[in-house]
Image (tube, rainbow, N blue to C red):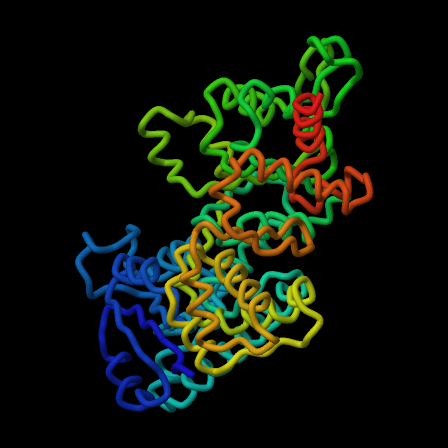
Length: 468
């Protein structure tokens, strides 16, 4: 296990030298002499375990200060640290100023100690550091266990930061933007936000790119009977279906300018008019968005409205690629084997040490989704014991083999399927098989497919029209 990383932010390096000399074998220690240097370091390093922050910065040029008063610079730095990180901070002061100490604690400092006390007994500082680390580790362990119970697996620093953000924003009603590469688990995090929100309505996921542009407005807003040809009854849209709950809009970067304008108006006014309707309806829906695109770049290119961007990104959570949190791979493999193996085998599976190490060293361009796919492929092809040979074979499997995992059951490996069927045909088969397995329960089938019920209605109507 790596030693805790302590970041010292002080305009003099004396404390850094003392701590390094006395406790260099117990901690990794970094030193920054200004707030700017400390903030830059924190933005590029998520391994910091504890920060020792001086309150007074008299020995650096005023041009390097973040604030205007050297004697309060530490408080200014603390405020900036709290805007980007939850790393525990111990304030260090030259003398006990009760008002400043109370202010520091209110601003997010976890503890404080005086230089005089350190000068008398340096072990007091180590005691404060250890006390802070112990408290932090306990809270992190609780977070890891809580999120594991919700199916979100991770113990890395980056995932713990994600957990903290989810816990902070879940009880609120503000919109959330989840960013990250394909396969990192954006919908899973969105579902977790909903579960922890206390909202009594449903979680409704919508993949914008899966809904034709011509249908998106009516699917989003719903429509009234007679609104257009074929509208023989009132139809609730995604927003109404998520009443009192959470509407998760995936691939938000793909929506057209027309839908962007309508979504902006809905979020600003908290009301909407269904297609073909005349009366405004109130919105009591929590919006969570996701994208694997750079929204800021889309805004600068004029492809995404800037005013909508600020509405969507009230609070953002970025999910790291799997290669950025390789320490989570072993736990993810164990979780997949425990929870998903029954889909493909009645045996209790196990995996060799060499196979595990190979999985850990692999870069996973497809992230967690690819890892799960590889494990399931291995389970299909083995007798319950996954070896290094099985893992390599699964990773090198031909692209003309498609593993269809519809909802919560195994459909199997279909060799040469892609070469003889279109993507539309594959989708139609998956939908019909799922409805069949759900015994006609369309709500259940929609859940198994991971799409909204209204989306399933649209797709089934298209399939039936094609068959007729």
